[in-house]
Image (cartoon, rainbow, N blue to C red):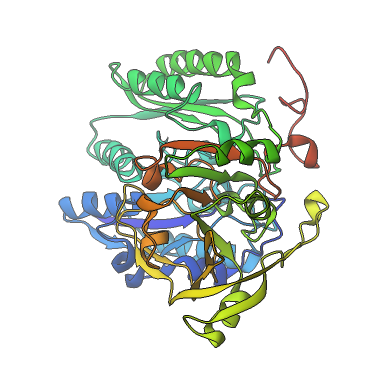
Length: 492
C-alpha cells in the first residue's frame, strides 16, 4: 500500500495587508519531501496521526509537502502552485490513498477556494483514489471540497487541541473504506451566517452545545463523523459561513437528518455568534481594579492568528495611559525594533518607536507607532517548542526576539508573527506568566490552550486591527448575500 500524506494550511484574511508568499510558509515551518515527515512526525498534528496509521499498515509513505503559514492576506499564486503541484504530482505517480491535513479557509490570488481547487486537481489525475481530509473548525466549506474527497472532518475544539484525534478518526474511516468495511457518504449544508471567531469558543455557548450535538451524533449507529464548522468570516469569498457536514456508512438519509438537526440549532442561535462591543477605555479601567492576577487582556482586533498585523499599538497605549502595572505583552511584531535593541545590547536603556509599521487600507487606518523608552531585558533567536495541548511538539520560530521593559510593562517583540497560545512565548524569553498581574495577548480564543489554567479573570479589549469584530468596518464584496448579520434575515 502506498499512501500520500500532505499538509497545506492557511487561514486567509482577505482584509489583511500581510503578504503571504512562500517565504511566509517557510518562516513558520514548511518542508518538502522527507523533511516534511521529519518535521511533523510525533507532533499533535493530523499529519502525524496519518503517519501513525500508515505505519501501522506497513504502507509506503510519501510526504510531498507539509506547509503552514500564520494567517495573513491572500496566498500568492506561485506559493500555492508550489504546494498544490507537489501534492498532485505525488498522487499522479500512483498511490492507494491520500490523507490531507488542510485548513479550509485558504484564498489564493487566483482562486477563492484553495482547498477545493487542490482536491479537484487530485481527482482529475486520480479519479478513484480514496481521499480523507481534516479541516480547521474555521473552514469555509464548499461544494468542490466535498465533491472531490471521500471523508472529511473538522476539529471539534477551539482552541484546537484535538487535531491529532480528528486526523486519526477520519484516517481510520478511510482505511476501513479500503478494507471494504464501510462505504462513506457525505451530506453537508451551509448557513447564511457569518459567525465571528471571537464567539466560536467551544467552551462557550452556543458553540458548546452544537459540538455536543456533533459528538452525540457520532455515537449513533451508522454515523462515522459529524462536524460543525464555525467558518471564517474574515475571508471575503462566496461560501464564507457556518456549515455542517455528516459522514455516514452508506446512509444518505441519516446524514441529511443529522445535518438538518444541527443546522437548525445553529441558525436559532445566530444572534449569539455576533460580538457585543464595549469602549476600550472602560474595559481597561475595569482591569485596573482587578488585583488578583494573572488577568488576561485580549487585544483581539490585532490577532495575528486571524491575519492581524500584530503591530497595532492602540490597546498597549491605553494600558500604559491608565497606568496598569506588572504587565507582560505577547507579542508585537517589529523586526526593526528588534534590530535596534540588538544593537543596543542587553541592559541598555533605549528610546525607540515600536509597532505601527503596517498600514491597513481595508479598514482605512494608517500605521501608528508608539515612542517608548525602556531597558533591553532579553535577546533570543525566538525558537522554542510547544509543550502545551495545542501544536504539541511543533517548533515555533518567532525570529530574532527581544524584551523591552518600560517600568510597569514587559513587551515581547518578535520578528515573525506568532499567536500566543502556549506559555513558551513568555518562558522562552525569561518571563514567568504565572507571576504577572496582567498578560496582554494579541489573541482571540487560542490563548486558552496555554493560558486559561492561569487566568484569574479575562477581559476582551476592543482595539483596532484587521481582525476586528465590527462588521461595519469591513467592505464585503464577494460573500453571497443575503447573509447574517450583514443582512438582518430571519429565515433561511
